[in-house]
Amino acid sequence: MNLPDSNKERELTSVDNREQLIGMIYRAAAEPEYWPDLLEHLYMMPELQRSESNDPSSAKLSQMLDAVSPQLSIVESQYSQRNQLLLEHFNQALNIAKRIYQLEEKNHSLNSLLDHIPVGVILVNAQSEVLLTNELAEETLQLGQGLYQKDKNLVTQQSESTRLLKKYIEELSSLGPNESSSRGLPIQIDGETEVQTMVILSPVNHLQNPTLERNASVVVFISPSRPDVELDLGAFADGYHLTPKEARIVNYIAQGMSPPDIADKIFVSYNTVRTQLKSVFKKTGVSSQSELASLVLTGPWGMLSQNSRHFGFSEIQNSDAKYFTLADQRVLCYQEYGDPKGKALVYCHSILGCRLENFFDQIDIAKQLGLRLISVDRPGFGGSDYCEGYSFLKWAEDLNALLTHLNLDKVELVGYATGGVYAACCAATIPEKISHLTIISSGDALTFDSDYQATAKLYRMHMKLARDFPSMHRLFTNILDKGLHKDPNKLFKVLARDLEGTDVELFESPQFKDKFGRYLKESKTQGGNAFSDEVRQVMAPWGFNIEDVKLSTQLFHGEQDKHIPLVLAERFVERAANASITVYPDQGHYMIYRQWPNILEAIAKR
Image (cartoon, rainbow, N blue to C red; front, top):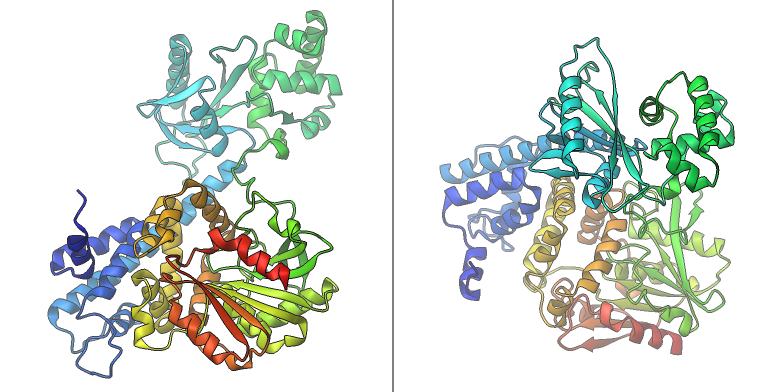
């Protein structure tokens, strides 16, 4: 039921029922996507909030977090017995979350192994219930390629094939530890006259492998039946001394095609196919088509062509990415857009983004404006190597090395959100390499209590947690990262809570979600450590002074920005020697998705 705004705000700002809060704590432990809700509630509880004053009687949230940190034991303090009990529950929930996280990592290792097996793999129990699938098998089930899942059971589209499938699974499930066998079953795909799905079934109870699903009895191997997928049988042909023509026959047999269909497909006689198949049988030591398919699909020889694998990463694995090796052997990943001979513009991405952040990527606006846009992944983001203890000053050194490598004497520099701080550091420390500085939705550091009060609640929580307890923040970041990958829509719900102006409309747009999701997914390919490090770094001394930014600087900011409040941008302008600001009314932190063309045009005109 939807609550009125006033009731919703009251629910978010106060949780008086301790039992309800304890329930939230353990729910977050079991379901990581609920950690943002829990932490937001904790930060808004009056008796647990970190006081910005020096009042020693206030129970500070920082003390609470210190008490529940995994590295520290809960100590007896001035907290009441009720609050002490709450802390114990919170500490226990953290331990549960860590154990769940570790178990998921082990399970992820098994799933990754199965995903690298070059055919579809399904683990089932004796009752034909599906227990685990790899990506290729999942794709087959979703597309209805002869097999699908009904009420947890693996079935086919034809009753007779389903009966045989269940019969074979029951037979193989009853084999003893020292018995091994396999059965083959070609399954017709509805609407197709010549393509079948070849299924090979083998028992797994004799493997005695504790990492497999405990109740698994049979492993089902599925040959690829999509016309764009072929088996790479080079190693198989070499191992059994097959001719190229014989290897081609094996490929079609493994895909479930019958000899007459193969003859029609390759325009030879049926007798020719039979002759080649007999030769294959002799060389491989099998006596039937199902045994041959089993040998290919369950043996070490067959591999799917890498060009045919569909892992869903095509939008991320961008062939335009370039790499530069620094003096300490770390690698920086960058990407170029626009006109290769145009005015050079280096882009510093946001803390939730990466080199792919090109907000009108359906149109090459940079090229139209004569700009050479160079977007660089910071260490730990996208394709750039992670670096422990990274800093704003270290980024200036890395960027300087990259510019030298690219033979660029001087460039324009633009930074968005946290990237604006990195850009400002470069302007202050290597001004000879920068001709002009542009900062978008960024500004001075959070310093005063009023600065924090002007930020979104969840953003404020992240900043304070990273400042006071970095190890705790890193743990939370990785737990949240797991939860948000589990339910990506949760991220948009969390981020959208405190938005205003046109940001609200953006977060309801499927096009925005697609872009933002792609940028975030590539940003987190190495995990959440770099994100956590950057939040902590923003909250620590920056290592340079804004007063040292003496270059011509243009700021663009949304009046309704709740991540980096407008007051921070205005304070930056006051402190920098030669800065001005353009403010967009009724727009927020994500106004760059709307204003990117205008910003690039302003840069191009200089």
